[in-house]
Image (cartoon, rainbow, N blue to C red; front, side):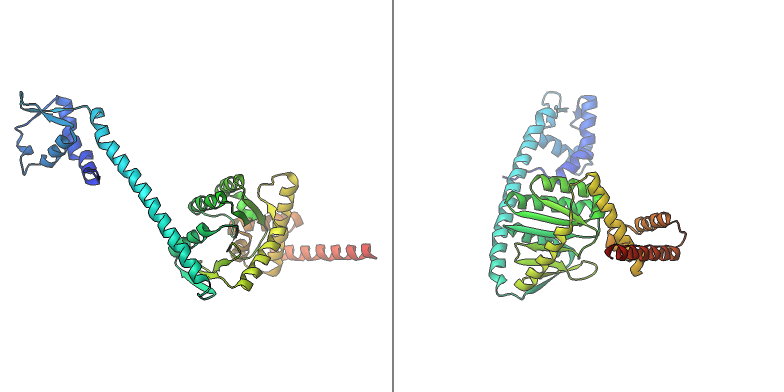
Length: 337
């Protein structure tokens, strides 16, 4: 049975009824004959609520309204609300389970008859699709998340979803870029996921965002702004994407490795990638995006290279690196001879 006290009554208690009760508590009583308590009076509704809650009682001897200790009243109001809330939570969970069962039936039925490519438009729709897809995952979940740091709210949603998958026995492997190691939120997420059996590695650069579920379906971006996603079910295409993921995974470095050798290797990867992007002539914003860092951080990498090669301009830096490469190539040929 639903409680008769809801948001409207609470707001009234927090405003007019609350002021009226405070006045009664301060003076020890309220005169029942106050015209503001009449049908059209200013405090008629407030008085009715206080009487219904039991915070005021009418004293037939004095004719006054007397205040009652809220501690003696609270349980009569709050406990039924708590029970009602628990019932609603249980019911909502049952509804969610029912919809999940229907969703699995729908996806099983349409896998063989639907087109090999499904387009999903809009971030909420993509998020709901991925949530349903991961909830159906039974054996393996492969994900690649480029561009470095992810928003904390995205990680919080992903953590709840991923932990449930791990608890079902799903093997989960995730690839990030090296720059993700600098994100406190990502480090917390990875610590929680790896504690439950997930595996996470990082790379200097890899392909765009990718999610593969049970090697049956792969989800990739359908637009540069990520407002469109494509779900691919063609077995050959999915197998091809799995192969790309596996090759990148083999080159990745464990996220949880923090020894000196690993840190040095990662720094070397970032340096080599920065040089490559510089030599290829990409713009700073494009290079920063591919490294998964801000444009300012990428400019810092370039500044470090200038200092390393003792030059002032990018032109001088390119020339100095070219000379260094030529010298290295000549030395290698000599050693081969």
